[in-house]
Image 1 (tube, rainbow, N blue to C red):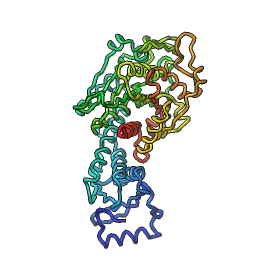
Image 2: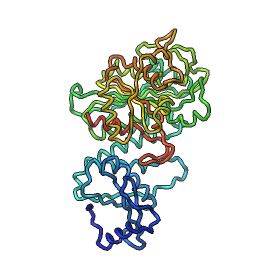
Image 3: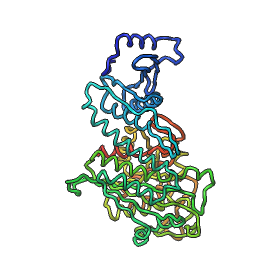
Image 4: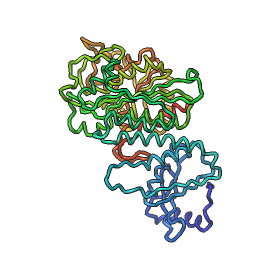
Length: 463
């Protein structure tokens, strides 16, 4: 297959002979996606030739290849890639997404080592053909990188106020309107769930609202999507305190909030012709003399009440307020929430697949397809009506913890009433495990993954 840059005949012959040499220490190259064969050329230009497999040439294959290439070249300052002549714009988008996301680094070291690889040049016969694909990849990668930064930042820095300020700083240059509500506003407007969860911390809760719409367009003519993300900046479990091991990674408990912020940044960067409003209910769940207690009854925004069975089921408490507020004041055409909500999600679906709950099968299917295209995964889960008895309460509308059985499903059932009249166009995504990677894998790096930015952006693009 030809490439945009033709190898000199002598070098091409060397490559053919080397690939066919059975004495090579590497196994025979099969051209699988992400497979890299390395040919050193001492004293030559280039000094090292990387031969990259792209599988069937699908976008997912190119995403894997882009990640593998930047890792293979990480010890060199520059990488030049000659594209095959038949690569598609979708393939180029995958290539750039994989390369950019795998290049992500986060450190707070006093003397960090800068990355060696600083330049990636892609050679093609027709650059203009791929300009849009590259722009889309860059927008998604920037949104994902911010989401990863927010997740990876330690919670001694990451207060609700700090998170909101970082989001506003990133959003404003893109023409996104921003508003941050403080504890006094939350109290005046009866956000009981947020105030209860955040009441044990010296760093009070905040409600972050970001609004994107293109200039010069009648807002009523645009579809209005509201994205809600859980924003627990640290979760001790409160009075129902977690064991030390269970608390270790709880700086990631705002992964849903980080994802919806990253998605609206990408939507604005791409100037998508939509109204996108993001709500992030931010709170820190701490034990103290002012913390909420098991046995309390909390009144949410809109009046619904919850009996507290566990203060460690705090995510649904803040989401309930935000969902009810979204329905009452924003009138969404579609309402989607993302949350690192339950350990049961990971037990059921593992580290790379999020649980999706919705009564709208068409909407669920559209998000499933967007996730597949984006290189993330969701799976639609049931909402069994007979599980409602697990969240019954003698004194309130529901209890906030359905026990250890079917955790993700009972959490979704708890949230469903807060969707109110938007219930038929509401989706809840539990992405607790996919929000964190224990090590590098394809385009993922160790730490926060920014899961959800890519899926939401793909879905928004499809609208």
